[in-house]
Image 1: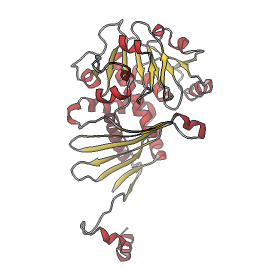
Image 2: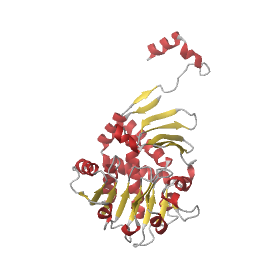
Image 3: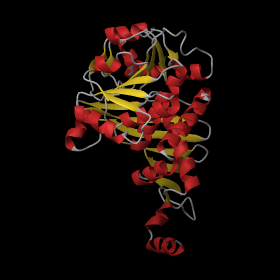
Image 4: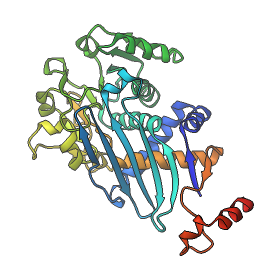
Length: 348
């Protein structure tokens, strides 16, 4: 049988654990898997592009589990009452190929993206960081804010979105965090000025320059989340040229990340090298660091493992017959026989 987790199941799981706890625990699953980087069979995700968006498959596996995620990105969707990003995913047993988990991943992806952002910032941002600018206040913004507040102790976040209602939504949703000071800024420049960390999580599929060179101050850490497909960026090229750039998986980031603007031999460091201590994250207090985050399948593997472990521990979700279970595994045709169906029903 396959454990099935739908949207309401996942929401119940998060509410039972508490979102800050889920973020912290998932970040540890992600960190642990980055420490096993060479155990995984990896490839860039497979993308089908259209004029209005993209649909992607994200596979990865180790010797025990195979994971994949189906995910889209369609910025125009919000005008039609749909989410910009929607996803589901699965885990399979490598030894048998049997699916062990089928799960929603829209909410899960928001949590794992925020957990990854905060995890990376723990290695790259200055240790005395206390303020952040959050540019783009859509569906993932609350998760980013809570992750940085919970995992890094960020106390002040200045918000900006071209849709002021989005910033007001974010501030209202986080009213339950009294130790977190939220300020709605009048412009990107106002939000960024003096910030220790700058997170960009915008949605438009365009070569954008949300951040420009004159906004960047010595010692800032930039967490670029929104530029995640070919033809979509958030940072001026000059910022990328000057920063110490950390990526998740270089073959994918060269296609989709901020470094798609750069020559193929431009210097980058993969995040696993920082986690393992092979490479430094931040080299000095004045350095500008950039986590060029496009989202990588390893993080989905970690997130799905976490969801499955917690769902089993809390008895959340249901077991479904996603694939046949046969008395004679060579007789698939038996499923079409009425007497076989009746026997299965009576046994259940």
